[in-house]
Image 1 (cartoon, helix red, strand yellow):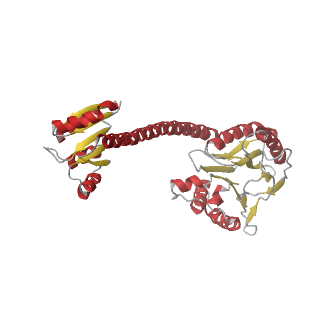
Image 2 (cartoon, helix red, strand yellow):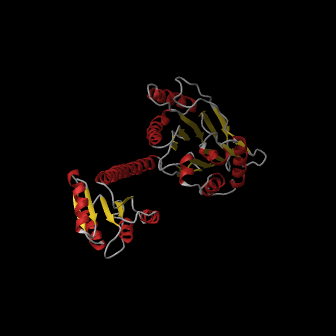
Image 3 (spheres, one colour):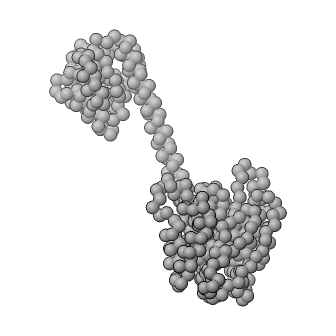
Length: 389
């Protein structure tokens, strides 16, 4: 039941107003002074206060201001009743927070109409607040789910800092949101072979993160069966295509797959639409080498064929894998300029012994740490693996 508080110092006037509202079904309270009105507002939490402009103890404008400035009563609606009927009194009432204004020589229909109108506003405001509370609860639940998903993703894809037969691997991952769509791994295969996987799922967020978790598990299961990168991508493509063949959303996966043969000092690799790694040679005359390879992203069409390429390496060389989020920050519209600058940064950093320092130099050159939250949301995930031979 809606509650109405009538604040009027004159018993006769207060009773007249009460009689106007008695058949409306409202729960009606009365107060004869400003102090009494403030106490009853706190005690009964009325929906609407009918506030007489002339009170015996404190100013009605002050009463209105106190009600509106109290966080517990700020949404209480106030109908200011004045015998002055001047423009200044109306303006002043609105300035201190009154929601409506009526002159004292009102008729019953006008009063009821204004009270009903204020109550409709109150009901809509209450509904809005309830929806906001529900939204906050859903956001809280979503935040918990995101944190759980991020924890799972971090467990499946922890930061890499390992050595394998004199080769050092160090990774860095920066998701655009709490969770992202990049995935990578370094997997020891048989004997003197080690695989490097760098992938990127279309989009980012929860759906992309779920897919990266699945792809990480699939990669770890299948990689030991394929020393040949082109066969690995061929099989992965068909498996992913089966998953999305009858799906509602079109999703695809970009992936670069390399197998390093430490005995032959060769890198064998195939590509499925992923950003190309760059090798910086220790021999000054050879400079940088881009591991060029073409191929359709995984999941777009069945039985896609992937090319196999190779590149030799020597002790002192450096190979850097990355996702296209690195170039998208500053060079999204100019990939050629990114490639040139990327090679220059890597060449300058090659002499550093610690790959972690190299990762920091790369990120400082290409990642916008000072971006706002909205800007970061629009940015893509960034993943790096630095391999020092």
